[in-house]
Amino acid sequence: MPRVIPTSVHGALDYAASAFNLAAPSLLGLKDSPAASLMPRINGSAGVAYSLLTDYELGLVKAIPMPAHLALDAAKGALLASSPWLFGFANKGTRYWLPCVAVGTIDVLGALISKKQPA
Image 1: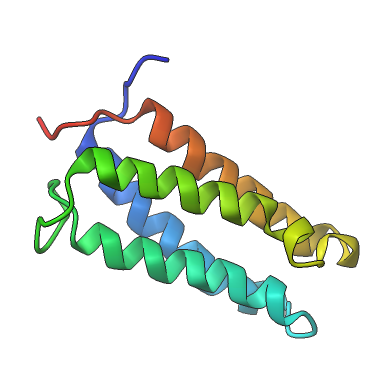
Image 2: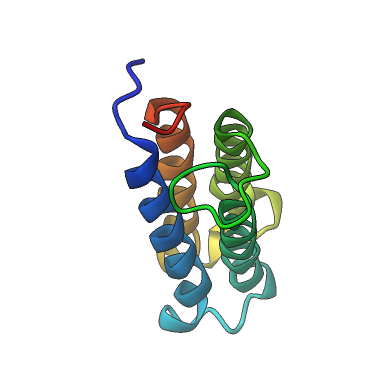
């Protein structure tokens, strides 16, 4: 698969996706399912934390190499996408599971098509 997304764009998407994940449980009213509320927040918090530590244009500390960052993206994306079934909230309705599956899938795909080195 060709790697077409520059690391600078990937970084902006990291922060945007993390912000969405942090806000989604409140915006979607997922109060009655702790797992459905917690998983996006964990994903978003982790995304911000290791993005700040990544050696790319939008990283602050530059301690994590981009290939390791991409591996973390793929792993956290796969966990988020499968979390409705792993943690038992898939049967609660589309608004509970669809954001997790969509954002998790985008995380995995982003990891596969983003460049491994900053320009």
